[in-house]
Length: 53
Image (tube, rainbow, N blue to C red; front, side):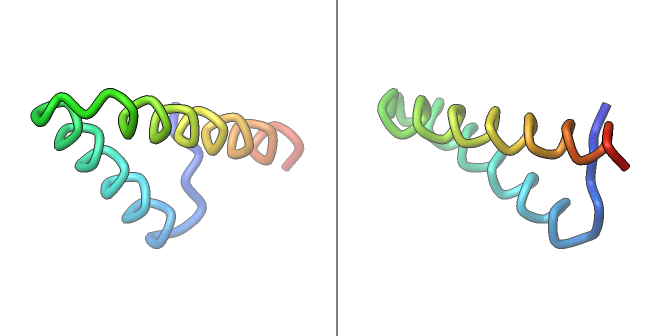
């Protein structure tokens, strides 16, 4: 289930996923952990917005 409001949010999500792959490839655990935490928070916020709309 994806809660994307517009194309800008979609592009942002695609870029986050590209960064995750890059960090996995170069074994940058610190950056990956930070990005995943931000990604999870964004997903939570989008989920809440979707549920209240």
